[in-house]
Length: 228
Image (cartoon, rainbow, N blue to C red; front, side, top):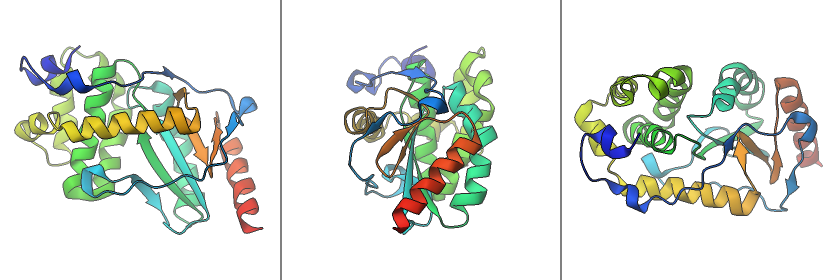
């Protein structure tokens, strides 16, 4: 599957894509602490589609960065079964700031296009529209990845954010979005040693989780440490 096929056009910006593709599926929670870079997570500046996509209090003492791919089934499972609990107990209560950054996995073209659509939605609807599209991509993952017409299925997802077919085609031509996704991949790999998805950076530490209990315990530990 190529971007040109998705666009029904012979040429597209994919020549500039230098994405580092990684395996979908992080380590188990038993191997949770993989690296300590000593670096605090930094929220990227930008507006609309180019902003860091985040939820939660910007002044929270604990920042979590998730590196994930919309084509990764493990990421979809996390967002459907674990994240709602984390959001209710830690994000909505103002305890943590949660940032979502793209880290594409195979099939690369579809992963990138899905991420671009979500970012384009943010131009009009902000972070809420971004996460609406991300959630829809996760919930319908098998349909748009493995169906007969990924383009048609992705256009249906885009329509939920008020984007028609013309807006879809314009979105996937935006080179600055490809560049931003490349930047997220490079920073995740070089700064935090991310090599699988989903991966989580909790105040600078690279972690992996398989259930809400272990994630909550790690967040409680980080909150306690930040309060000292």
